[in-house]
Amino acid sequence: MADVFSKPDNRMSKGLSIILNKIQNLIRKDLPMGQGAPYEFCPRCDANLTLQKGYSNELSFWNCLGCGEMLINPEVDAKNDIAWICDGCGKMMNIQPGFREDYGEWICIVG
Image (cartoon, rainbow, N blue to C red; front, side, top):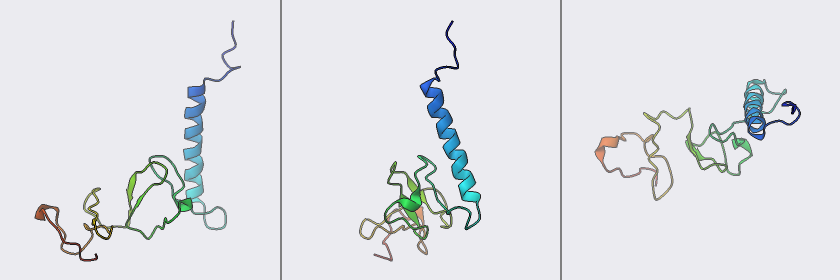
């Protein structure tokens, strides 16, 4: 009879690894300054956003370079999770004063 504990199931090992990484990321995020760097992670792929070139938590939105997920800054006062982006300047329009989705058309006041 084979020993079921001698050779781990790869699927179980991968799943356990993902869970452990998420727990470690949560712990690192809660550490005060000086005990660990304040990291920000993509909720979809767990990529470290702070290591991605061009990323800043001051941006209104960011496209994760790991998976392509569009992430809206939680500090942005947007009514929903839809980001309306100007084709000309790339700025988020639904946080501009007076913007309403039901207008059907909007002229960006930034670009």
